[in-house]
Image 1: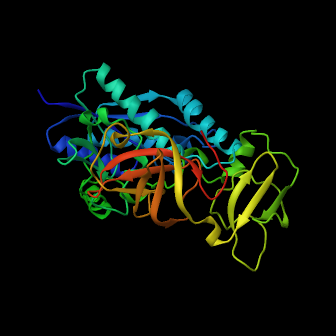
Image 2: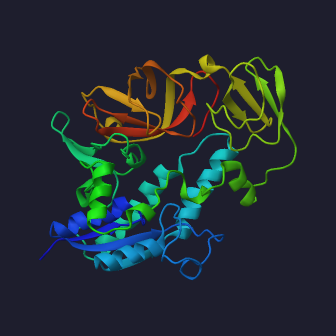
Length: 371
């Protein structure tokens, strides 16, 4: 009997190619889409355009249906819109209520998409779950643990966004694209007759679509009022005022709306005082930070590996170490402008394997608390 695998499909080229690879490798492949977001502004694509799909956000049902039909794959849909709204969207809004910058994609991948696929697969006789993420599974002989590691294609690596996936789930997950490059995936897709050029790649939180954060929160009736916000520098000197500070994030320079001869960056958003504190580049650099909500083997046992931390998916790891008096506080061997409360700090060993993660609670240069 061929092993059954449930492939999470988004309508993009990566998950489609992952399904083809597994099918050609002898698996009994079924496609699945976890429905998470209903954009009511999107027209009925089958009535309004010639193709059976539309410009996608994160996961798009018509494109997945088309792909599964073309690839002759059985296909299911799993409705998780309510859970997505509750855990991801509401959590996103709550983060901005606190004046921090949440990371919805890490929450969605771990708590909604993969968790849903794993549960459905287990209940319906599937041996594995697979996705089109660019990550590898790796075993550390030194520390005797399995983990997610960076992909061969560092530009497309998604290990940062899967850092909150529970390690005990990895034995049932397959990542076919871990050793592929994006160029190779696209070339393979063309070879198989997939509509590669029409499969739009999403680069932002799906529910934001083309809207920025402030516009999204306004549309969601988040309660943004017309009263103006003060903008001050680190000394408290007024620089001007803006319509709202909601949606601004630490380190942001463009879009604040205050002209200044010196380059200024958002340092902190004070929701209670309706004030945005700005600073120069030097003032947003950090050498230490604190996390909350830790998870991963580095917090469960003593590891011998050196630690490197990434605050964004696109940055290279910075060497770091725990403070002796507190395992959740870290010093950087260097400095970074990426220590943003609410974002995820992901820790890697020297072999690029994820060994832990946590929500950035505090940058020691400012009085910001998250958890």
